[in-house]
Image (cartoon, rainbow, N blue to C red):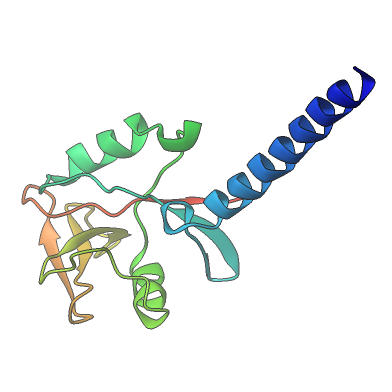
Length: 141
């Protein structure tokens, strides 16, 4: 009887260690991709919103996204986009599409923001009334 209980306890311990290893692997999987940008660590959103959005909707998306229980998702700056491209952190099924950046074009007006294209690395800008894609990141502590 005691051997039977010992076997059950050891089996439970083995399963617990096995589950911890699986969780560790999951934290390092592409769905939990962490990248260093500008000397700080960022978590990349595993499934960015589909479609194109005006800039005011992008801010709303950032404020309402709660993936992994985090509510502090942001869109990258142009420098962060460039660094991601240099590190080959490119969205799945990357096409010739433009992403909103957090950076405004001019201090004189905040009506225009910079855009970034992962496919070719080009930068552009647009009025916030037009629609482009969203790429979300958050600081990782």
